[in-house]
Image 1 (tube, rainbow, N blue to C red):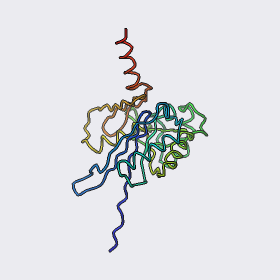
Image 2: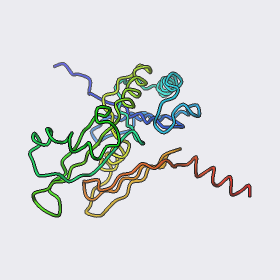
Image 3: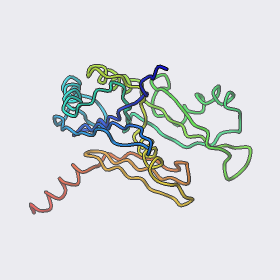
Image 4: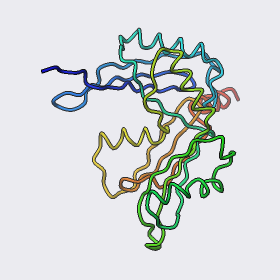
Length: 229
């Protein structure tokens, strides 16, 4: 019998001030953290999700993987900020095949970009609370330009991006994998260096999601300004 290698991924968090990589392995007792590392990047290399200095960031990614002896090349990343739109909408009840034909037209009124400039995905949540002839859908649109930037960055670092998620959804997946869900509402807040992601969950569904351009850097600057008065 030939035993093949178990497929695996490394999670790579590309932030505006630091890069973080986590390698998870499957064991008989469940998932275990095999490797974890973090490295700072040059100020301004990434701003509001835009990669201003891809060569510098790609070099930092290589250093991060080498320093922590991470050999796996397949990775999962996530994106956020103003280039990503997440909207919960209600549409006429239809089959998924029918919805695929109409979702692009429905999306145009909710997306502040030219529809040709974005990649669109969606997930059906189920019937709305107001009536059986309507169903709720999570609509996600990401600018093609920003997706290409991150794919090119990963390739420059010698890696392969197998998954590109949305920041808030990635945080939700981590939460659901580690905690038993209840009927209570849960608020997930990720405070980064320059951006804060908010995701409110009701059972298994996200009911509100927002990225705010404020993080630890702005908080630190405010504290410094108050101490200098």
